[in-house]
Length: 60
Image (cartoon, rainbow, N blue to C red; front, side, top):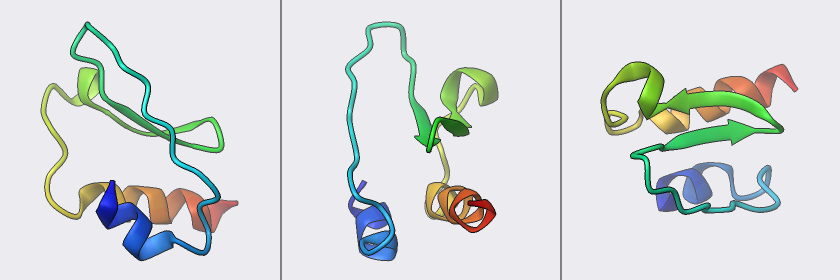
């Protein structure tokens, strides 16, 4: 999460962490899914979330 804040601090007004007991790890930007561990079956690679979030921020 620190990586996201460092890169997009001026563009992200808040980040929320919601606990889950099912192994779920999802990242959403304005209700659009950027990444889902359940869909990919793996943890995100270093830098992957920054790129995916950046792509969605550019889309608006």
